[in-house]
Image 1 (cartoon, rainbow, N blue to C red):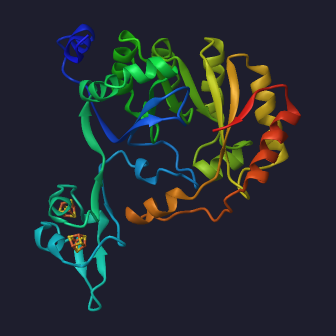
Image 2: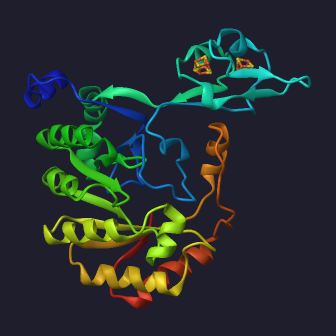
Image 3: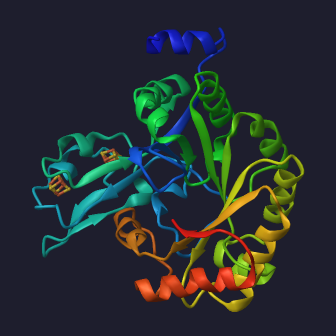
Length: 316
Ligand code: SF4
Ligand code: SF4
């Protein structure tokens, strides 16, 4: 079937729904089963101290500057209408991120690829066209689309329309979620989602709030709601040494996975510091000072969760 036929079968005469997408990663093997196209949406309700996608936190488009690529040609300074780029007496490039209106003029003029804008408005149909190109790989591998972020469900109408379009065209749909969207959003979108990749970030209300900015209350309510409608869930557990790793945490994960039969398995996501460089590029602080775990430490985490429950635990 032609792509335009796929779209016309599932679109009505309603106006096109648009969202702000900051990346589309094809051939992803870490965002659900099989080979997947991961669509990363901007905006998040939480602010996890270890966030590996700090460019996703704001709902708005954002300028990013890579100082290592900059050769100081000052072309950006000449074209910017808002005085965002300046140079001190030593020739150091200063960027006033708050003054940027994301017009993109400096990005277009930079010959070194040192500047970029995170976030692009795309319609559901535009994203679907990118996704459906890889259907043959999805079908062969048991893959599909994964809506991620940020928190994908912050752009709920967009996600719902895209999930419906994908389901109508036989594409397996995963949503990666922090669990903190409105309860009605989970219930409404669930019929069009094959699998929720649901975060379990920290055990205990106080710690969860300290590490993410929100308590566990809404997250736990939504996890129970998905259990009540028997929606398939993989529990995704980031492990950040010195921040959320504890025996109480391993035990709580195992207990949850054992008591909710819609939870297929637990995936452990070991800490990495890829977010550090990206935070610096968009002019924000990186808030974690943790060690990257080695293989032995990671294996011990998997075994600690297994110790507390008869459940499948894998590395993501
Ligand atoms: S245009 Fe690019 S390379 Fe030149 S000063 Fe600006 S960021 Fe640096
Ligand atoms: S995107 Fe536009 S407003 Fe922002 S720094 Fe570049 S030229 Fe200036």
